[in-house]
Amino acid sequence: GTLTLSGKGDMPEFNWLYEPPWKGLKSNIKTVVVKEGVTSISDEAFKEANLTTLTLPVGLRRIGNSAFTSCGNLTAVKFQTGLIEIGDNAFSSCSKLTTVTLPAGLKEIGDKAFNACKALTSINFPTGVSRIGNDAFSSCSKLTTIMLPAGLKKLGGGSFAYCWELTSVSIPADVDTVGDCPFISTKLVSVSVEKGNTNYVSINGVLLDRSKKSLIQYPAGSSNKVYVLPPEVTRIGYCAFYGAHNLVSVTLPTGLKEIGGWSFMYCGMPSITIPSMVEKLGNAPFSLCKNLSQIIVESGNTHYTSVDGVLFNKAKTFLIQYPNGNKRSTYDVPSGVTTIGYSAFWGNSALMSITLPAKLTTIENSAFEDCSGLKSIIVKSKNPPAVDGSSFNGIKLSEVTLYIPKGSRAAYATAPVWKEFKQIVESTVANIVLPEARIYTTKGRLCLSLPHTVLTQVYNLSGGLVHTFRASAGDNSVPLAAGVYIIRAGEYTQKIIVN
Image (cartoon, rainbow, N blue to C red; front, side, top):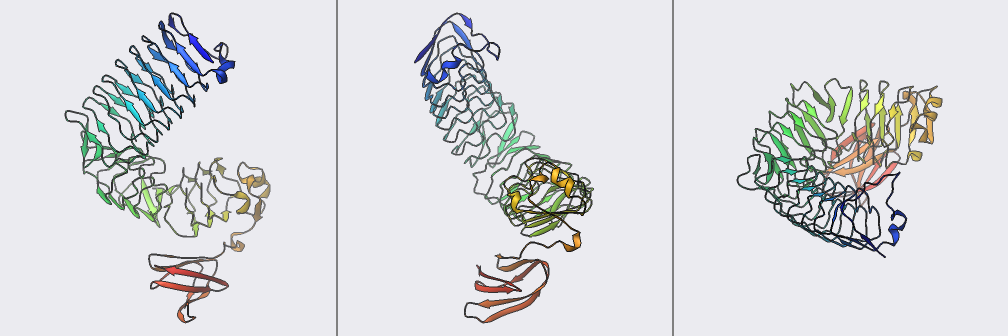
């Protein structure tokens, strides 16, 4: 049916005590016609309604927060002159909305105003829009081009994030504020800045503030494999290099002081060196970098250090990041560590067994998320460490063996998260059995992770013995020429291919 709204002035604000009179009819409303004279639409007025058509009047000044959010069948909206503000989440998750033409005179587009409008292919901005809010058009996955308007002052963080098909953008001359990660997960090969902008600059397609001290956005679609940051840079913004898969080498400047959270997430480099002056790291700056095998901290850094390629605070009480590309099957967290940080091991599929020290008290959220190869966890503390509910997301805890000190079963069996483990074994460290062998190849080398020392024999497909050696418990690596081989390591046998 059709709902017609008429009257003079602002629509009343609704809440749980004073609900819109059409609330129970939302599923039946197909068309909404707002007559001239109405000057605002209140917050959540048509949230999750089934409407397909919306007619707005001349003189409507404000559309409230979440006014039309999740109207999944709405395909088009025609805005009229007089509109000044579109509120937060006003049209978010309107998944069939294809085109948006915004009216002259519009000043503000709120946070997440058109977030997740997945069918949206184009937006026409009028001159004079002064603010585009945080995540305003994020996850508009079919949006290919945008022309930001003259007069724009503030571009919110994440404003066009996850617009997968976006290929070009230019920052207008009047912009004085750009939030972090405005264009992550796009196909941008460069970010340009219009002449006359006194606050921002583009250098080789990379967006920085005018002083070049803050790097805001590296275009993830760039084909460049090597990038050297300008020497003036002291801060790398949140998600600045997010998704730059092609990057295999990044050189950070000596004067760098801050690396924002998730700044290099999903990048392609095999190693990264943190300069000596860095004093602040955000959450999981190098998470899900599949090729990253080591994180190096320059000597002289007074805030951070690395041990065997793993990143810690200087006191080695906080484990910040375990490289996603580290192929070791076992890892003993150092004895002094009290906290395993946010997403520290996230996505490492090679890790089969981890030993947690007696001093460990806290495991932060997503610390071991999607560590799909994990088969055993050895905890040396009799008191269960505090664990966030998401710490082991993506792992079937019923298939992981939890080894704990003798006499602590009752504590672990009732502790949050730990009680989800179905295989709990009380044991001393000495009689804990490591997981089964792992045999694989990488970069022309045969790699073996073994629970104990074994005689290892390498045969070609004709049955000829190519190589024999004793592989020790833990990780082993030997070079092999390209070819197909049969490996016999003690009781383990496996065919491998060396490229």
